[in-house]
Image 1 (spheres, chains in turn orange, cyan):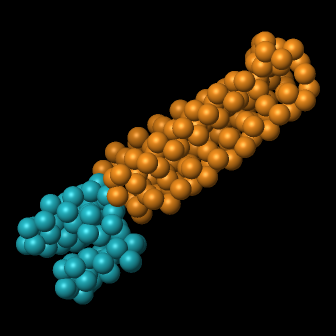
Image 2 (cartoon, helix red, strand yellow; image 1 turned 60 degrees about the vertical axis):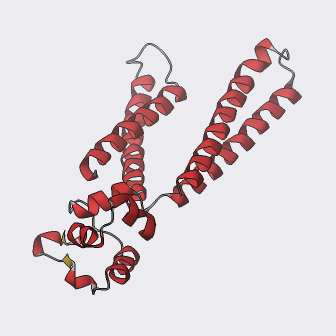
Image 3 (tube, chains in turn purple, green; image 1 turned 30 degrees about the vertical axis):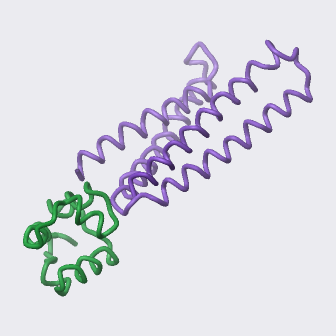
Length: 130
Length: 67
């Protein structure tokens, strides 16, 4: 059971890192590597998309391996993260539209918020049950 | 939900890790069940029932406050 878990975690880590790297290549490549060639840019984005799908499949396989308590912990954390992201995301967007913040609203900030929220809610849930 | 899982496990001489391995859950889940912080699913309760050779209602006790 533990070895299977480790193998699933390693696969998820590999796909996550490869997704991050392909996202970085697709973002900075057009300007710094291939001089805005549209075909290569489209290919880089497609590779990133395929990596993202593989990462989701790896995450799903790990989730299927979780037992009932682990699933409950993760599902509650995901639910809270989704709700908070919708509320905070809309408020952030309104701040941008009404020019109450100097810079443009960036999707990266919202993704960072999701990651931190998921981590915190997971830690809180673990303390509740364990 | 109150339960006698810890008592029955100790009668068998098993650690939480061993019971978890037999049932197919994590050690943390057994710990949470024993502490009454988490109510297991029906399949897990039936697996325990087969293991302890006792009907479920003899080691899990429903209380009005659980509903």
